[in-house]
Amino acid sequence: MTDLSATVERDPSLPDPTAPLTASGSLRRRAIVSRLVDLTASGSALFAVAMLGLVVFDVAKRGAKALSLSFLFTNPSGFAGGGIANALIGTVLIVAFAALIAVPIGILTGLYLTEFAGPRSRSARALRMVLDMLQGLPTIVVGVVIYGLIVATTHLETGFAGSVALAIVMLPLIARSSQEMLMLVPHTMREGADALGVNRWRSVVGVILPAALGGIATGVILSTARAAGETAPLLFVNSIYNPNATQLNIFGHGVPSIPIYIYTNYDLPSQQAVNNVWGAAFVLLTFILLANVGARVLLARSRAKMSG
Image (cartoon, rainbow, N blue to C red; front, side, top):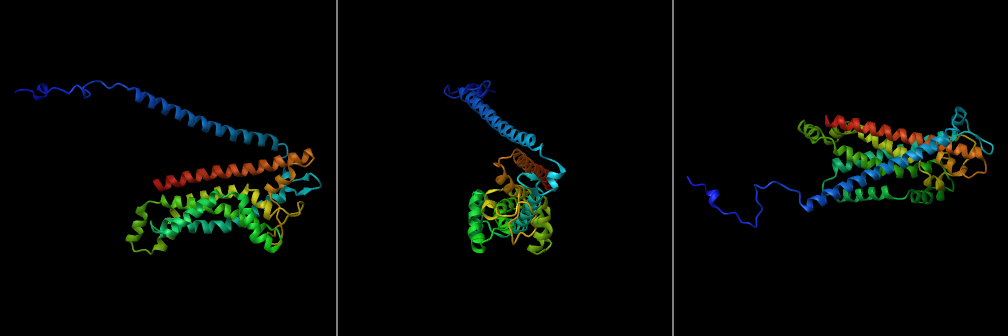
């Protein structure tokens, strides 16, 4: 029987399929470019980590000199004496009230975008655009707006005005993180609730929201850490207060805070004042780093739970 493949002549203009594969010049160039991009990206990441390490090391080295129990648990006294107890308490109060405002609104916004708004909803598209704009808005602009809305009308700088400003800073991060974590909840859980005839709001509250709670808490922690370090909004709405007293009434007076303490004391003509500023910066940086690490751990556990 005649082998037809042997009798068919191959077109010399076509590549031989039986020939061994060899790297062409174009393939080698793409491999070199890919390698250069990988090295550049890795180098950039290492540079960013090195800058963070340099900042943390410098703040820790300078701030450790001022750290003591009296520094953490006494109020400022005199020109550059005392500690930062009232600023610590004030920062906790302002950020806590900001979280009380931003967390419910942010979570409800994320629920609306993922569970109730349709894929072609114009209101959902507008809301996403607003959140993106708020996330990129300079915080000093937020301070100016709150100054015009609250401080200028009441003729009084208060810790509550600072909480409102920080709530606006926190809101887009909470809403976006809630939306992303709710989208990670498996659709089978929604389908199972629908198959059992559960009302939509009950399935959201009893099934979907608990499944994404760990990731939502991560977004809340990250937004809280970001708000705790904000200085620009507080300069406009909460920078007038008694620096030597503890103020618990955020509605009637200005409240001391660590960012404003750092801003108002860093250029005083006293070495002790400079040391205190570095100590306050170290305390604030430690809180932010611990909050970020805790949030990452919580997010990893939440994702592992949902994927498992």
